[in-house]
Length: 350
Image (cartoon, rainbow, N blue to C red):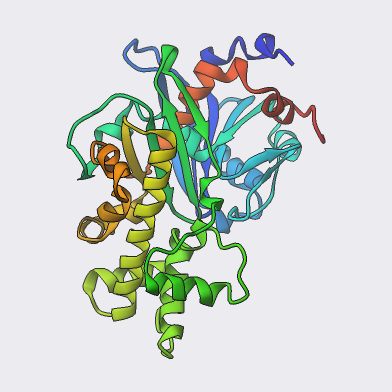
């Protein structure tokens, strides 16, 4: 499955890059930069609301019609989920993504695919890190593996490991790990969500929809009727301290995020630091700063000695995923993992 002959000319021509999440689709027209100080150059970009389109191909076609003047034959897709055959599998996407249908609808020669947080991790050596705000730990730039975590419509995470040619990135489905309660109140929440026991994923708690779930469960536990209907409403009420259950929901959300992030930082020995990504967290920065996030991130005993040296920062998602996906494509597009190359080229299930 060596596609080097098909990909050899890609750096010289513009290509589509799409960072597709559960809520927004960020799309850009990119090409290899003629400036030696930059790897990629953005020619045009737009942000779409996924729910306003019936499919990914319709969303991309809207961008092409508005921004693209000459035919584009190559596309890089960063999206939540994993490739299974010819399909990207994820419960949080607005619609199923079938790679063969996408190629045919847009008359593409190639669709390369990577995980959305994998793409963000490839942007860590660019403006994603430069525009971040320090949350806790030492305010320094350390060396070693760097973890990026982001709660949005779902909960994503990836690890950047430094090395030659920019190092490499490990994609994860860490948001699907079992939620572990830390407080009595959290145990009551888990019991309410799974009264007969069973699996409750971390992203059912630590995400935008998870925040709304927390709020509704806290109301139910106290016999109250919820009055807020969206994660944004819960966030706004918590910032204004206008609803006690919204405030508590955000406090538990931040604490659980600390536990989740600390678990991953220990598992991967993320001595290079942690980046928490997304506008959702940026809007909560002050509450996050004064929450139990740091205490839960540090855990206890020997783990605290290690994790206390890990810097944690908050950064906007923005178009960083688009930049990271483009950088990955130009550096690694000719050496994709076999299963990914087959799916992208139509060799499996097409």
